[in-house]
Image (cartoon, rainbow, N blue to C red):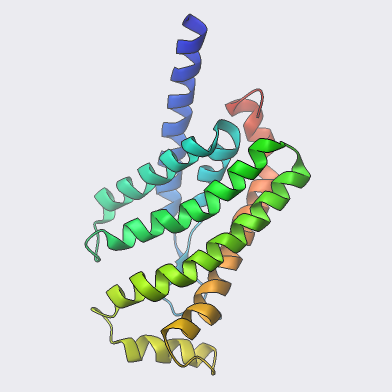
Amino acid sequence: MNNKRIENTRKLVVTAMLSALATVLMIFEIPLPFIAPPFYEMDFSEVPVLIGAFSMGPSVGVIIEAVKILLNLIINGTTTGGIGEIANFVIGCAYILPASIIYKKKKTKGNAILAMTIATVTMAILGVFINAYVMIPIYSNFMPLEQIIQMGKDIVPFITNTLTFCVFCVAPFNLIKGAIVSIITTFIYKPLSRIINKNG
């Protein structure tokens, strides 16, 4: 019983630490102006979330993702009435869940790479629909939709509407983000997993 209590305490502490790290990393955002307008900014907050999900399971990954979003909401507030934060949570889970579920079945480096590749594509596809039907309609309350489309058109000339904006700007943005997060995780996960979880 004591061992189980110690294990649960350890898992809680690690979850809290990874959530805090993810929250800090979420603050440092990098625009990718060659792919998407500057209001799309990349961060590395999914790295500690994915490490937590790989080492302690998909449900822990979802918890870290949720805590990260909530803490960022408390620290920075919201300009979308919380809708943007919910969308970010859904898109984050679209990456974390497929990756950790696939990896959990077979914990090898090759399967981890496959899992992260599938997760990156899943996030990119879902991101198109979330942005087209949730985020951009909300954002158009602060910036005219025509201006948003034009900013995309300045990068990719054949963008003509919200959907093509999402296909040619948002999807590549999420593919690049997913690829970078996956590469970083590939190099740092194993050393960290030995500390987090002896069976990781």
